[in-house]
Image (cartoon, rainbow, N blue to C red; front, side, top):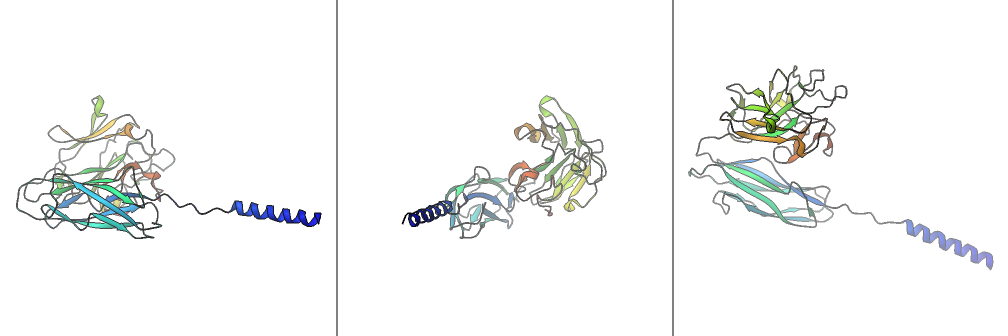
Length: 315
């Protein structure tokens, strides 16, 4: 009897231990962010998609409610939206709605459409990339300057050829530094007379002046390398060579682009992100997103992508 009791107790202990080791799979936290197919909406027949993106396939259906504001008027006056709610089906990772411009003959100038996630069901709202600013581009007035900084490399890696951003087979801190600009408007733009400056908060210096007639085409990118012999297709983007290098510091400076009238058109604070990144900073998603270190983006192994989108495809 004692022997049987012993084995019965042993069997019960083993069953308890095995049961204690069993755990249910932990569902990942579902986070929703917002992106758009482009940064500008052209008044003349313009259309773009607003995308709700999840960090993992939805275990159950997700609904995302949008709120719109800005100087442009909705309700069919300046634009229409196919729906104020984006519904992501179970098992999917994204869905979209369509934003369309409404053509008129009023000289209103460019207007803004501010879009944000108001609420989400079955998902948490991302801390970043939860809102967008879209420019509604008026075709009844003269074109204005319209370009953004999409990627910048002020500290290329000095590990072998990991920092050879210009593709010429030689690493050079100043030559492989680059600035990538993107024109989100419906019109080509002449960058002639604009200047790239470094260390703007301490007086700084003019690193490169765009020659007259330098065109950044509509919805295309332009790259300025510090020097060397840029080699490759760079996604078909316009490629320029500063010649004498872009003498950017590895950190602790504000890089800027100055307009011909002497005003600052845009600036980039290298200290606001991190120092000595050994790679570029790029918008994620391209054009509309916040700046992130290139090689730290999920699914990306390259340290830069001059002239192309993050994944190496052309604009």
